[in-house]
Length: 236
Image: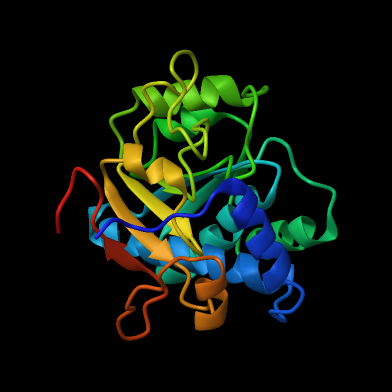
């Protein structure tokens, strides 16, 4: 059976509904998203594979998910470093940053140096709302992600990919293929172009909401907030 996906427009409407009739706050949704990402990282890259995790955060909600994931990874015993060059002035993001600072999680503005001394990368730069061109300072960052041999876990979408059509035909991100993708709430159409390990993090979604937006809530195991599902080029 083909994996059901939701468009970027539907994903935005779903988030809005979750924060209205669904009763969730944006803080809760970001916490659940970041927790899901941290658990996926733990599954694919347990601490014995290397504790140094570089979390690259964009200026929006995707970056906020990355900040939350970094906090949880720190508590799991990893040594996260956060690259967050365009810090939001929004109070929520400032609080997430403060939580990391209180844990002595380092922030860096030097992505190449951080990349040279890490074991795994979390790509939390752009999510399902991304469109248009990649703006500074991120073109060089995404190019570095394309070129590195290190494993990368992308949050909801590989950064620079079109949510409907996948990687750009040319230019920045056209050869970016992360090892792992964590689809938040529900998969987006770009997954048909993805060939790595695919996790879904949406255990909090009520069946009535999933029915309304026509996607499946997979069977989660135990206390896990993520579940691994097959991808087009990868059967489990």
